[in-house]
Image (cartoon, rainbow, N blue to C red; front, side):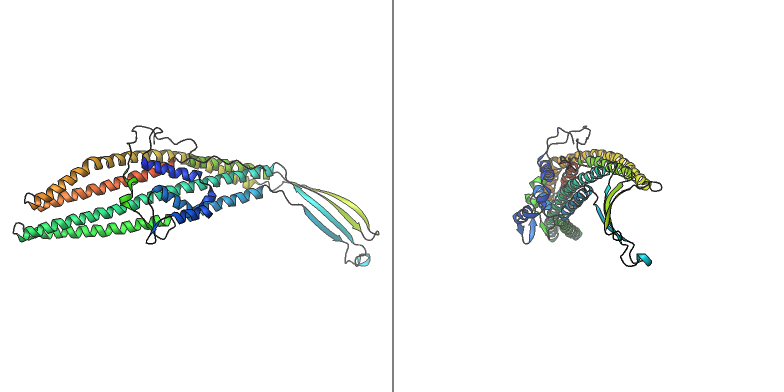
Length: 446
């Protein structure tokens, strides 16, 4: 979408929905805010009323379990960050020697008791590297939460648009049935007056039955679309009002042709790819530092019972010798994971650019189709169908011409409905692709 493109009313709604996602604190998905949204949702016959994309996104943010699951994943990463900053615990030890032996060592006469305290000291900057890796993991899960919010917003807007389109398809099917009834009544009158052959009445009856089949299918598809929306909103049932969905009909000005699609700086998915690479690099650095052995220092006191309770102090130092295990396997694995993240990022950037270009192309095609159908095709089809019905009643047109004119009218309405749905859904894709990452909150100091 060109940078200078002025958003139309529905695009503004979607942009506002995305802004809600990126600015709403995670805690607002639960607790009092969630109860306020739930209490403010109007209901009709037990079904949740969804009047607009903004409202649908707001309800989804407050009710959808997937968002709470993503937030739990971020809190788990924050727990790992706390663990990463902890230092090793000191160790206290007690040893008893020369006890329960034979001869002069029988009983506890020669008992020697040693009390010791030791501390493992991390070397090579392991703790700082561990904190860095855990902090980058927290940042990555934060971007994952934002991605879930934007994905949820897109799915909700697209599901709402589909539900409105399916509900309008039911209205179109009912109109088709009504027109077929009118033609059937007119045909029966002409047959009874002897101005039409009985076979024409049978043809009109077939067209009437076909319209009934289309209506049944449209009603089933509308119910299925409503159930899909209800799942996203975590509601038992939802109700859409297609007659009041003015946002669905707004297509706005035509997108500027010939403009190269470009993702904005800080685009969320690219930020996630970069964050993953940074996290993998931090993991590799940590594994390399883990190859450096730690040292343990200790001090203690030994009491000699045989010497009348004399005591002596002890000092100790332990250093592992990295002869066999130098953490080679973990270093190799971390390096491979970094290479894979870099390759996936390269592929992901190409995919994002291609997806945005394709969405821009689809939006332009859907916009042109909707505009042409609404301004030219549909008015002409209505005029032709009305004239054909009036002419048939006056004996100027044949039944076949009437049926053909009505079929063209219904097809035009169905094509316009489909084009409007395509516009709304593709715009939701573009808003999702152009979603930006929130500013990082800053990494906590160790």
